[in-house]
Image (cartoon, rainbow, N blue to C red):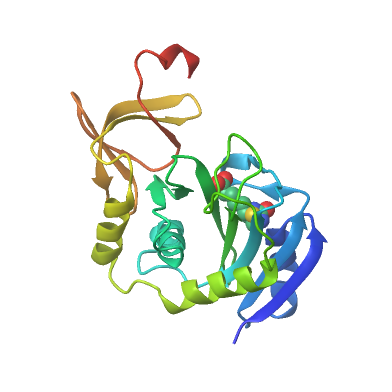
Length: 227
Ligand code: BTN
């Protein structure tokens, strides 16, 4: 049983989830909203609102290997929308068939539970962002959020090897040359897969690098100075 609260508006569903969890520590909780005014992404980034977006945060048990939890969520999002040809970018971004980001995932750990936050554009009204679907439509956000969170809870992976296999099949940059930047640090090389903790394995002349954090882009030597 999940305690689902759907709000008209809130600053961040992650914050509301934390508040609710302090009142009901033992429960499975899902917080969603029509409009989020101060959404947060990974690495202190802002998550901007858009009419066709879902915003949801919920309690979740960690994956078999806890550092795979966000990766597992990204795979389950693509499975929920099976047929829409969604693809994955390391570590846990979801891209649509036109190679535009359509969902982002944030996982935070508290003393008792993991808190999963998903921002997902059913459709997009901004040029730089993609939607799962091409055309805008009237959507019942509460039901979409409930169904997505329920699907995730009911379809967890029991084996990391199986999860890795599905992730690789959906990864659009496998065996491509990429750059991963983390602050001032940067690694360029061929993306050859996921390591034992979900880290990126990057192969170059120096060997195989294990990269645990950062933002990945396809490497384009002609555009490098722009990055
Ligand atoms: C990313 O940077 O790609 C992750 C974005 C996560 C955004 C979602 S929207 C619902 C939840 N509430 C937040 O403030 N952030 C997450």
